[in-house]
Image (cartoon, rainbow, N blue to C red; front, side, top):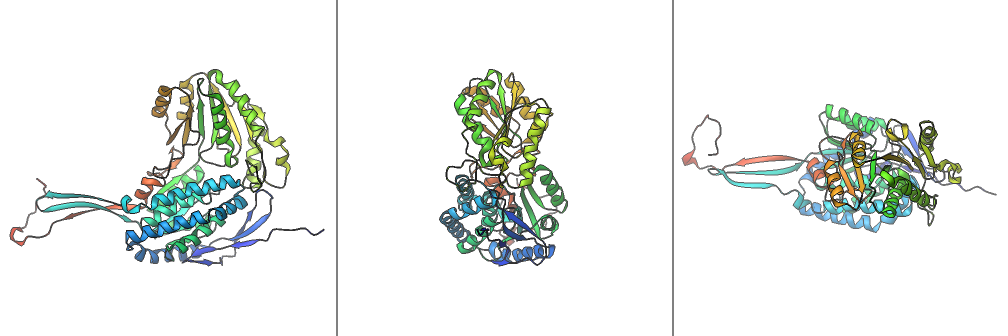
Length: 503
């Protein structure tokens, strides 16, 4: 009987509005995480190929920054409509390369689309301020101008959404953009670039370089790249921030997380359990905003764990393209094994593995599967607590009081997001005030802001001053210029060497 194999495609760069094959002689492969099959080959960019993309962007920037805002807005609206029209195709690529379920992939496209819709309001977002008669006959006003060539480096877990976080605001503000997507999931970004061209984005304004550290390092040191946006792990975010700022660039580098969900004794139990399971195991836990620690306060712990365990038993794990599947595989075999390793360590560190995803039949398939796992009696100082696991492992820490729960949140080196579940408005208000993190959810387990606010954490979850997308995204991709003007009246002109006065 003949064996069928998946055809292996080639993923190229996108430079100057066309596909460009890599000539570096280096490449990588893309797997379907649900089957383990190699489905694509990716040509990795050389430093020279990165230089070509940057030079192309620099040349395109000259005309694009002079393009009227009304025209840029028209292009963004068409871009939005094309993403809507092709959202199923984008989602299909996400499922094939990342492993997430079809529903989750469509949700990712929708959240990315919100950022394009926000960028459609760019004429209002770029409005400056004007002060008449600041001094006699003198007016002062501020304008915001694009930076030039800006770059984005994006992770494997959101191959469409995170690039759209960056691309939409960057090009709407008048910049030219060079994207280096994750080499594990390159397909969605190529389709997005094709749709941008169809929408009317001029050739060279949006470019993609596929690759690895060689491409990243060249972007970080290239003198014509004015700013860098990054989303990924904390060690890499820190390195990118230090390298790029040393080279004189503006940087926003979003790192890892260890998000705590505090459950007070008065919380609605079923609601809290539903939220914990949804936030811990959605996208196989490969979210920087996933809930990885439930902090159970007082006597809520036992019934909450029972409710979570009951819900885990009903989760259907399998290939994301199959109907009814709720959780797909992890991105690679190596990452799956790394995540499973935390379960090996848990028992030896005094924790209790309540649900072991390694015992599920899915874990032994050809795909990179690990079923949902639940670990109780976890404490700070252990591997499960201290590390960002980035997989379907939910830890439970038991504490006696709100103060102890807050201490855990605030002493953690990460500060991305947190949530509290309670029916007490006063407690929720106090937690909102006390929590030292960038994003807080009140009875909302994954408090990712809507597109007209900005996304980002504190502490070791963010390197840089400005959060990504939303109003801070516009601020990041532009710089302010203040103009002080006086139209001359020769009759009153004279030499004055004193300090300029306004009174």
